Amino acid sequence: MLTLGIDTSNYATSLAVFDSAGGVVCDKKRFLPVRAGGLGLRQSEALFHHTEALPGMLAELAQAVDLTKIEAVGVSEKPRPEQGSYMPCFLAGVSAATGFALAKGIPLIRTTHQQGHAAAALFATGRPELLEKPVLLFHVSGGTTDLLLCDAVKALTLLGTSSDLYAGQAVDRLGVKLGFSFPAGAEVSRYAADCAEPVRGKCTVRGMACSLSGLENQCNALLSAGKSPSYVCKYCLCCVGETVVRMAKAAMQAYPGLPVICAGGVMSSDIIRGYVQQRLPGTYFVPGKFSSDNAIGVALLAAREAAHA
Image 1 (cartoon, rainbow, N blue to C red):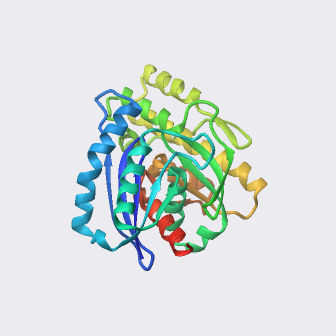
Image 2 (cartoon, rainbow, N blue to C red):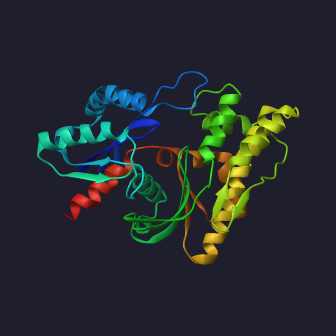
Image 3 (cartoon, rainbow, N blue to C red):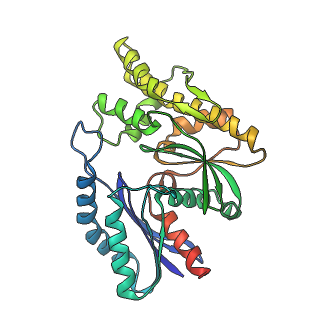
């Protein structure tokens, strides 16, 4: 069975085709344009850019895959699987997915951005059984620093989050301050890799909850004190890594034996992965293609739902 996934997040327009017999067939992603020095887009701007991008991206996808063979369409309709979760940018994806499904007379499966992240990350571990079991899942991005109890993807229970700034916001604000384009995570990680000086991350964690508002101030203070951009970038990422380590340890005490998986765009960083895995061996970090915003998990969930319909 071939399924189409559509995800229109606050960062990227994403499409994917999943084959239930063989995995990912094709995926396309286009980051939303943000003006130089900007820290994101208004929702009206994001909705416009998604609406503008989708027809051309679907045409590109059709050149790689025979879309007439699609048997179900999945779409992320909101950020999280909870009441009141809403962002207008997801309306673009819902509109395109609904039109595609109605025109072909095929099922439309609605899911959420966070469940798509979870499914893509679990699939990428290479252990398909994790899609059916409870796991501890980090979803760390520009809009989340969430530690979740993920049960077969359908049930996501929030165990801990940031009380103020999200990890991705701290990384992006540092990057934009240094002159990088938004989103700045990849460039911050690249600069951090040039720093050979050892860095010990600091963080504020209480149980499975954290606070990251101080990280932005710490990075600004280090820059004012004359520390190099590469050092400060490494410091920022190591602080995020230390936050993940401490939250994970608290969760592993409460839920012993469950594997820990890290997803979300911030978790694409090699610096964070190395920091966390050195202190928590066995933690799963999946490739950036499956970790950052994408429609792969949405297409996978559509295949699972359609198969059981």
